Image 1 (cartoon, rainbow, N blue to C red):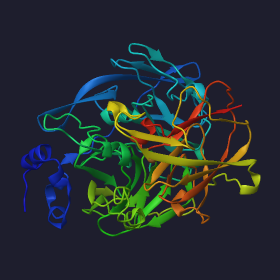
Image 2: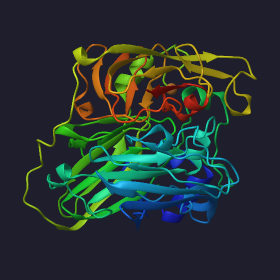
Image 3: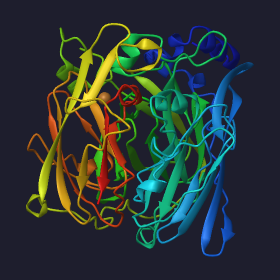
Image 4: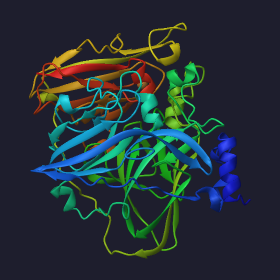
Length: 499
Ligand SMILES: [Cu+2]
């Protein structure tokens, strides 16, 4: 079966679901990945004294995801998403974030260990026409972090329309490993998102109660804002820096040739050693760094596969049964190697040392129980009167309530308990943690690095251990929340201060 590019694209726009419900016939089609992957530009800083100053402008635009069809979007310094900010550990960084939108917004630096006043959560509102100027020092390990809108009650919609970008941190330790670092050449960022489109090209968002309860799912995959992308590789070894920037979809990544993924990094650091796995589950807000060695003329497709374990956990007959796991096969990206500069180096195995803390070091354990409840229409939370009431420990997020105080310098265990029928990605602002255990079992191999977001499956409990260092502020809180953005917007969030 041969589909011309034009009919493929047009078919996608008009009957969006069809081409992306992949089956083996489509997987054999050469035209499945017709579009060159867009690479977000690196943002060049201005230098002011010892500071690197980065300028971002959030503004409305229009994006042509499909030929001849314009989608209203918002972006930073462009129509959709934002440029990549790259810094080094030890840098003094200042940002000037101008809001050229007609609405309020905020910009949260996801994964950064910085003072709460600079965190960009719901309290650091940027009014239309004004400029927000946070500044901080980079005091953490090399990692792929990101930035995105965090406006109270509207994070899901603003991120969906395009308010997100990458924040790369480098350091000497990672440089010494000889990993690929040539941005856009052998160091390729991948922001994976899913979207639904209306016939007029607009994003379709929150059309049903189901979207709020289960989280918004799209039937078109965008990578860096590119539909059906391929990337042509020039070097034998490539580093893929993957962000799940979706509102709620969990991906189970794998290669279509059955070879293992080589995983070298998680959210807030590289791993201690590389991990070989056939599949990698990545929840919203989570990141992974992968290495891939290609041969001349080889093509490899990165796919998202059905997730048998998680689908079984959700179980038949449960209210949310089947919504939690991945039930579909989705094409993400085709890697194409033509002429390659070859290298003669084995894949690295030992990587870096990552600090860790034992349970005995913790001053206390806090428990967080995630709540989802159905309510009648006109319920308490969500836009458009959606009746979903969500919270943590029995109460929905309130901007006026600090849920607890953490003493500066203390080490704590946070136990996240999920008694709901869905998997939730739990994210904590301002720190990087280690996963201590999952239902008492050791963390997954790909979690043996620093993390700020962790998947907590239905009916399970995950314990993470955190050291709260550096930044005390009794007035300005950090957030902790579910990174299914519809859940966050519906109240599955809380606030703490470090004092
Ligand atoms: Cu959730």
